[in-house]
Image (cartoon, rainbow, N blue to C red; front, side):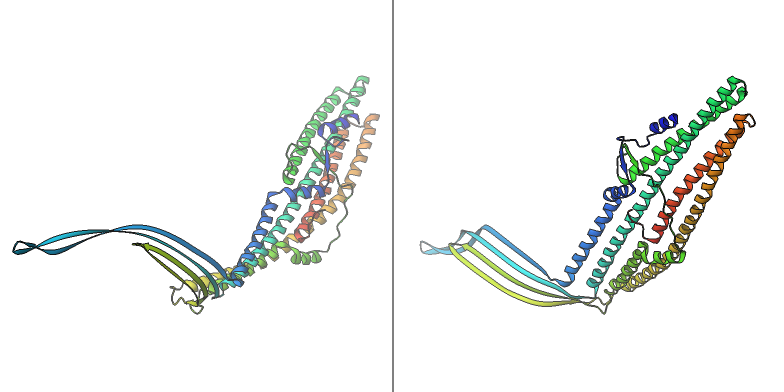
Length: 452
C-alpha cells in the first residue's frame, strides 16, 4: 500500500497541514457573499424599495418648489432733437434750424422670488397604478433574489459533489494501479521460478500502463472539478483547498404527491409569475388612466415677492410687490386617435399571457418534481445493487487470485476479475453521488433548497 499512499499524496488528497479544508456549508457561504449574480439581485431589491418610496411620495405628498432671480442693468440713452427759431436780420427775420443732443444715464436693479406648491389631485389613476406597479416590481426583485440564491446553492452543491465524485474515482484508479503493480511483481517472481510464461509478465505490464493512464485522467478530472468549485464560490483558481467528504448519506423518504404540493407552494418561480400577473394588472389600470373620461386635475398655490429700483437723471425710484394665488387646472383629452384604446387592449393581452405562463409554470414544476423524484429512487436502487456488485466482484477476484497462485487459473482470469472490481466500485461511487445530486435536485424542485 506504500505506492497507493504516494500516489494519493501526489494527487493532492488532504494531509495534515497541507491546505485549507472546506465543508459544503462553508462553500455555500463563500458563494453567497462573493457571487456577482447575488450582489446584482440584492441591488435590484434595493432599487425596487426605492422605487416604491418614490411613487409613494408622488401620490401622497405635494411638490414644493422655490425660485428666485436677480438682475442689474446700466444703460446710456442719447436723444437728438431739432427745432426752428426766427432770428432778426436787419429789418427782416429768417428761420434757422438748431439741433440739440441730450445724454441720459440710468441704473436699474430688480429681484423677485416665488414659492409654489402643487399637488396632482387626480390624474386618471395613473399615479396609483404606478405605485402598484412599483410594489409589484419590488416583490419581483425580492423573488428573483431568492431564486438566484437557490440556483447558486444548487450549483455549489453540484460542483461540491462533482469534486467528491472525482476524488473517489481517483482513489479507485489509484487502488487499481497499486493492484496492478502487485500483479506485475507476482508475475515476474513466478516467471523467474518457471511457473508462468513471459506472456503473463507482458500482460501485467500492459495492465499497469493502462491503469496508470486511467489514473492520470482521474487526477486531471479532480483538478478540473476543484477549479470549477473554486470559480463558483468566488475563490482564486490557484487557491489550495480540500473538501470534507460525506461519510454516510442519510436516505430521503418522500411522497411524490406531498413533495409536489410543497413545490407548488414554495417555488419562487411561481411567486415570480404571480408578481408578473400583478404587474400586468397595473399595466391595464395605467393604460386606462389616459381615457377621455378621466381628466387631469392639479391644485396649485404660490406666493411671490418682487422688488425693483432704478436711478435715472438723479431720480431714485423704488417699487415692491408681493402676493399669493391658489387655483386648480384640469386637462381632458377628447381625442387621441384610438391610442388609449389600443394601449388598454395590449395591456389586457399581456395580462392573459402572464396568467397562461403561470399555469404553464405549475405544470412544468410538477414535471420537474416527478423527474427529480424518479431520479432519486433510481439512484437509491443503484446504490443497493452496486454495493452488492462490489462484494461479489471482490470475492470473485479473491478466488481468481487463489486459483492463479495455485496454477489452476490464468492471468487473464485475474485481470478480468480485477477490472470487474474497478468497474463495480466506479458504479458504486457514481450511484452514491448521483443520489446526493438527486436529493439536491429534488430540494430545488420543491423550492426548499437551503444552505446546509
